[in-house]
Length: 260
Image (cartoon, rainbow, N blue to C red):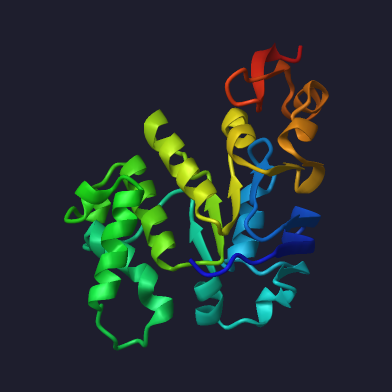
């Protein structure tokens, strides 16, 4: 992996016509931190991640990578620094899982360059680390949702990014692979920004959490600071108890029911 970088979203806004999807979101991720985005469906998590990894351009504000405006970076230079695992993997039709992962080496090669022995080793290692070694020869479009997630995570790894952006990376994964993937992300040493629905996984694997609601940042801090019963009631509309996990020491949310 490349040396971890710092990320700052500085008053990032994104609008589609009259609809404001993000409204002045400012947050930081320090080098090597694992930072989680949480919030209800439609709160703007995916939109913010897309602004960070470059498929969307903020309509206001900016994204800074080590203090440099990401909008001024060329696509290839940005891809050498930032890799993304989108929420639902599509495309790759006709390609094997191995070939999809190998695409992650493209930012480090000239257009006409063939894969080297080193590239092949990167691909095999990444698939093994994400639990997808047995998928290498299968066609990507024939894979289950969880299998695709593992392949896309492997593709991100072979980019050797300084910043890894993941949108609901545990979607479709069984419990074993959820834990395996989040432990892998946590142990990479890269800066990671990920959106998660599962608040207990977020508490266990993230250094800091940021809460989005209707496109605005409404809370941020350590999991213990953020995951409060008052926040869960206000933002998620649920009654819950927040306890300390006896084995991990992380805050654990026990849901009691919706707010009446």
